[in-house]
Each structure stands twice: as structure tokens, then as C-alpha cells.
Length: 169
Image (cartoon, rainbow, N blue to C red; front, side, top):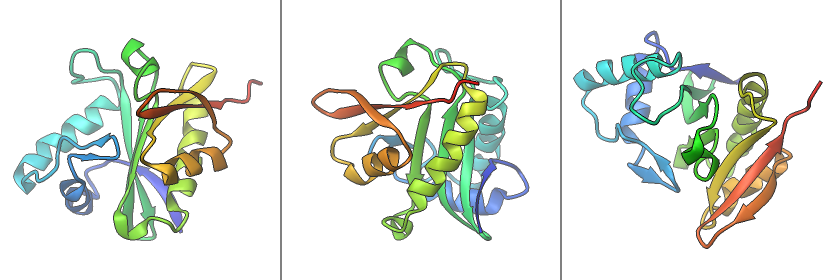
């Protein structure tokens, strides 16, 4: 069964092994914890969890929740939901970033995980649209976004800036 679960201390061993192995920059998904030691990950996880409630944020950052995409008892992806926009996010990464481990790509996990996160975003972000960005060199991620009802808002030489319209009730 596929599901999203926020970063938490109960799953620290699996979260650590997954996060440690994500490259520092994979198609624009930045992982500041690449290669982190197990001992240092305890503190990092505390920060990740605190950031989700707006605590211990670096200057210029907004609250962001880190989710892991699980398939039964195995982590296959990491997804981040920034809870609102600031100027740098409007013209940059937007609300959502996600990473699927290489061995799980091209199997629909990115599309399904993004669908689940977009649902959470619709309940969380105050803006009328959810903002995303994808590098032009990552057509698989763009396809996942488009399959989920996103549209290309604009582009530059390196990225597509994508939006998802929330249903307003």
C-alpha cells in the first residue's frame, strides 16, 4: 500500500538510510543531509520536524513539512511541502519538491506521491494555486505534474514553472 507519512522519530532508522543516500542535488531537489552520519541525523531530524511547525527555521525560510512516500514498509521517496510562499519561492521552487529513489522511477510512484501531496497542499497552502518548478532536463517529473492536472504557467531557459489550481469551495 502506498502512503505518505511525515518525518518522525519512530521511523528514524529507515529515514536516515534513505536521506543519507539522496544526492546533494538531484534534478533540483536539494538534500543538505547527503552523506550525513547517523549521529548527526538525530539533530537533523529534530530540525526537520521543528520546521514543519515553523520552529528553528533558517532566515528567509517558511514552514515546510517533509513527508516520506512509503510502499508498505519501504521508503521510496521524499516529498516536501512548503506551507506558504515567500518572494523567493514565488519565483523559485514553489510549494513542492520531491524525490523518488532511482530504482522506483518510471513506475508511477512520482505521479501517485505527487497526487497525495497536492491533496495535502490544497488543505494547507493559503494561495489559490500550488506552485511547482521542474528543470527542463527532467521530463518525467513534468509528466507527473501534468498527469495530476498541473499546467505550465511560464518557463525560462532552465525550468518550467508549473501551477495546480486548487478547487475553491
